[in-house]
Amino acid sequence: MSDDENSIDIARRMSRNWVGEERSLDGMRDEFKLYGHGRRAGMLDELDAEFNKMSVDRDNLKRFAEFSTFRRDLHKLHQDLRKAGR
Image 1 (tube, rainbow, N blue to C red):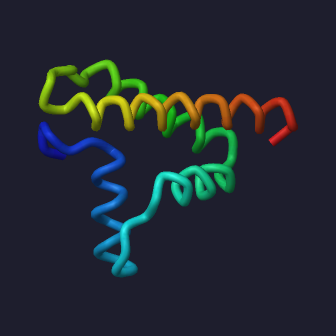
Image 2: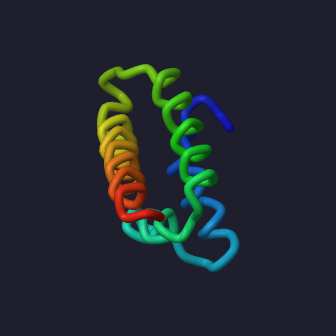
Image 3: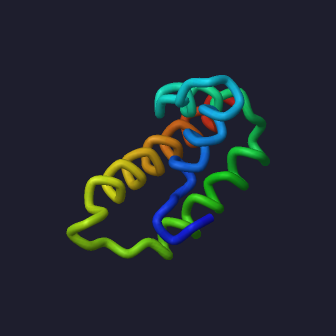
């Protein structure tokens, strides 16, 4: 992963290469729901580690905001699924 590419960018690029179109953030969230507890927790740990390494500056503020919102949404979704017994 290059310094200017985050997990969201990589997922979009891989999706574009495999199916010919970019995966949306909603599509990534829907797919996240299908994973088991262990896999979701592992993915969240990876996102948290990546988030802690990110630097915020004027050039990447929009990408940082998108990433932090996506991360927060996945954490909430994971907690909701845990409460539901999934």
